[in-house]
Length: 302
Image 1 (cartoon, rainbow, N blue to C red):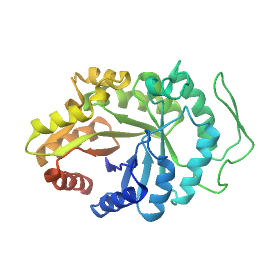
Image 2 (tube, rainbow, N blue to C red):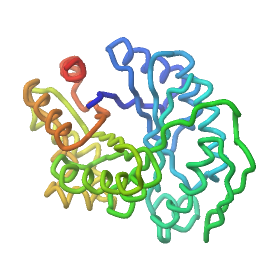
Image 3 (cartoon, rainbow, N blue to C red):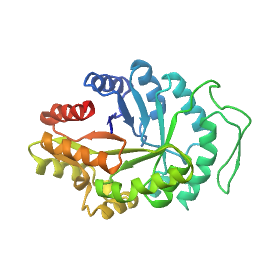
Image 4 (cartoon, helix red, strand yellow):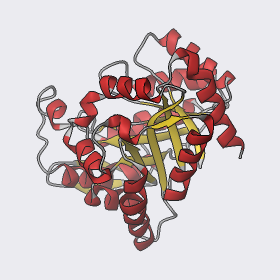
């Protein structure tokens, strides 16, 4: 299991570059950034990736509804060229309250929408001609969009439910997980996506898991802080379903907290469950942050 770390990209650009440089100095060569309401993450990664030439970057995730597949393919291929082929493009459906409440776009039948979207996006990322005409997503291209000579970025989908995991295994390189505990990964995520990939004749999928983590002597205070700061994820339906499947009351119940030895054991449990890459959301206090970084790097060296 590879080790990555979350890169906050919603502040000033110089601040993001400095943060990425500090994380690289701490030994991290894989970083994932979200796209929520701040700066455009792909643009940020194009700039940060020109500064740090030995780091792999990914989006976790870009919501698909505001971007036509041709536009997103051209942007991703441009970023891929800019940073020397080190981009993983993670896409997702966002949430109904954002899609309908903020963007004014229907959230009806989201899995069906994603399937139509991927039918257009996936070949476009490879520079292939596309003639896709779906009920809600249509796209046509006679040749490459964006740069002509560039290797396709790896494409992953934020997938939790069975239908989405089957789409991810059948049409993409893997999935990105958040708020999904180790038991759910082992019993639900891994067998579903691996079965779909095998049935489609595709390579074993990437399973990228992101969870809060902290090496700490004060687990109780850490859990309370995580439940407070990440409370929204316990209420959003898609994540709530994963927490319920795990038997978790709140976000802290799927986090990785404890001593160095306990956290290393929990990381090993994720690897055994089928996770191919762990992207750390470091939730430690300032006093515990170095110990958390050290544990992550120790696991990576194994």
